[in-house]
Length: 223
Image (cartoon, rainbow, N blue to C red; front, top):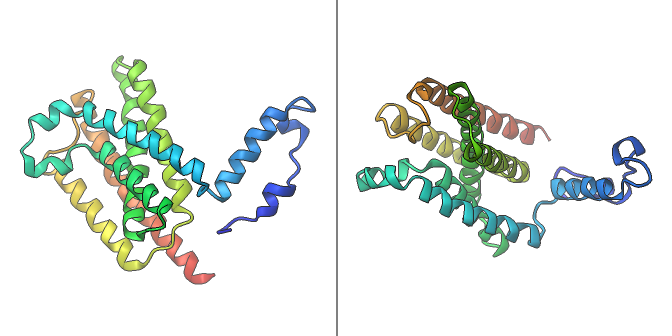
């Protein structure tokens, strides 16, 4: 099991303080299930549940972008719906895992993309509170996009990739940020005052992901 000891799952004793005492079997089960998925997120039932969740989320995401997509020339469309495109790629990556047709290129792009735009959307939705507009939609978007980032990290830690693959992802992240904030194709924001935060957080997340990917490769080379 990659980067994890199965004995943690089979024999780990959960302290009464964490489990809630003798009656905390539900919490113990929840913690045990979480640790099992952390060690091995490739259980078939879990993969199919994520496929369904991300597929439905992607459909809603494209619906969310419908007005901006309608006003965008067709040759720029790929740069508009960042979040639903990332979750769509993640869905396809999961299906290739289930079918034993894995592509590290596809998985690396999907994991980086859902992490980046999951965190980015959380930042922008929470910032809406500064404009007095935070509502139920923002809450649901915050939760769902946080889930995107978590699932990206969950699978990224198990992925083996190469330097050329990482460089390819760096190139795509750079192109995407350029098109969003130089050409001006970034997703419509909740308030025009968010533009500076949107730009800085997008570029900052790209840089952090590249550093994370580089450190991961360096650690792999040392082991």
